[in-house]
Image (cartoon, rainbow, N blue to C red):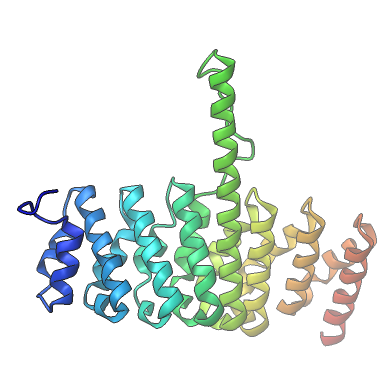
Amino acid sequence: MNEESSPPLAESVSRAISSEGDGSELRTALSSPNPLIRQEGLEACTRVIEADIHAIEPYLDQVVEHANDDDITVALRTLEILDTIVDENPAMLEGELSPLVEGLNTEHANVQSRGGRLLARLVVDRPGFLIPHVRGIVEALEATELDSRPRQFNELTGDPVTRQALQEHEETERKRRISSRRTLINVVVAVAETEPRSVSGAVDGLAELLDDTDPAVVGGAVDALGEIAARDPSAVVPVRRRLLDCLDHGRTVVRARAVRALGRLDDDRSIPKLRSIAESDDDEDVRELAAETADFLSSGS
């Protein structure tokens, strides 16, 4: 670039902000229909944050919108910026998370993964920020459930090398999706542990996750329902039968968690099924836990 040419957009925008300009150039870049210009706007935001993180506050709502951008590069760049904010001043994100949560329902597993990790970091110290978004996170989990079997490419191509490359890519994406969904259900459980009554509105969505193909997601949904039941049993009673069905789940850990959740629900109508599990379950620990829970419920009836 010669001395007479214009500086890159990101540089000129960040200079304008640092010299107390009105920010119109940055807002124009962030709202551009051209994803390359939006990227330049986000790069300018990065430079602004490096100089003074508080200087980005007037533009933060517009920045966060791009966590749900149609362009994957723009979305990931936005999440990088939000990661920096979580590191340096997480309080700035209070009330600003809706676009990020909306962006979790995406076909791009890496966007969901990055967004999930950001929420997992935030929930440790600021669980209250996520209370309004539990239902949205649960909806994203429902919308991105994996098929029970990985996709096969035999009919797509006859070339074994191409088929193997496609299969390996599919497996990588599948693993990333599994990891991101497990992170998200753990975020929901963390919020439920902190403020169980506040997430009672997500009970129906959590009940739908009890049929998920991933046992880890099922177990997390059971745990979240158990946390809600301990403080607000009336909210969980309508899905009690769905919890009872989990006593027949193929995974031992899910059955054990379901026993605990039913104990916290404190509904004596669960006693007959628990007695049956106490006599017939394949796992000794589950049998003992079911018997103890049935006795507990009987003593209170």
